Length: 373
Image 1 (cartoon, helix red, strand yellow):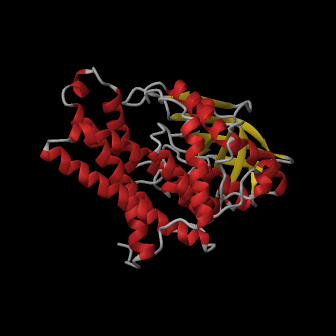
Image 2 (cartoon, rainbow, N blue to C red):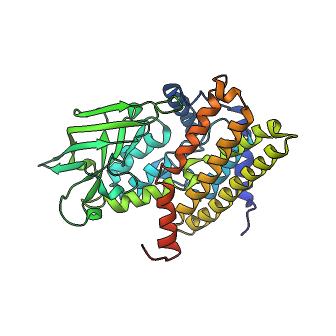
Image 3 (cartoon, rainbow, N blue to C red):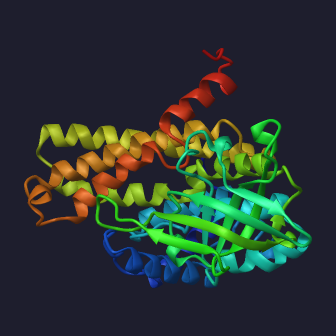
């Protein structure tokens, strides 16, 4: 595979590099302050959008630039090289659901604001009894004349307390195969009957929320796709979510690696751990480029995105552990709470977006063809 830039990609990279030099967003707030973190990310998203750097592979009519996905990889590489303290905002996978399944009215209504940061979104998939086994969800949407009445609960909903809209999965059929009775909706979070309860995580922040739906009414026109399209829509969303190009994590990882070179110098154990973390990040980046190549050829992300996710977990946790070790006692005495927070967050990588065990099962069954046990 040729990883060198084409002439157009090289010109794009230089233009982006110059823009980043003039538009550094400044240091990110600690992850223990979720409100400040949300506001920082929103400002950064709006700045990137105004500069023309978001939605690079989206159609132009919905606010994108119609470029191939390699340009998104260049964006993430340059963010990391510039030392920018936050990567590109992870809005891509929700947009793909509306791009692939939404009506033209829904696309024009939602996609520009989602991309620009004018509106904030959350993802209502997981439930107390339906995390890794998402098809077991029990939130129910009962069809009326021109509305659905939604009752149920969602869990681990990132940023729900700040969201204007939610991409929601709910059951619309109580009988039949569980994968076929699920539908998707865009739900305005200010709808009566919706209650959001943030809960505090081990690192001090409140990124995650539980969301209760107590007879919330949603217009039929806010259903995305036909009834029963929810499961294929969810698989598309999760495939994009598990691919680090949509998350922009490579930029963050590279910046962290650079910051750890100094503290690791001269310590053979630390230098070995740094080298292993570098290899994990580079393996993730290179496999991502292979995934992007398939997307350029017109392929929709599929089970191969689970490999991306497994490589991301390895890189995320290698860096979290390395950073904690580098702080020594200060990370345990409360003098440097940011680093222990970073370490604790890295442990969640094994769970969010589908657990590590689920990803291994997908690789085993759908790529390697191994039998179910």
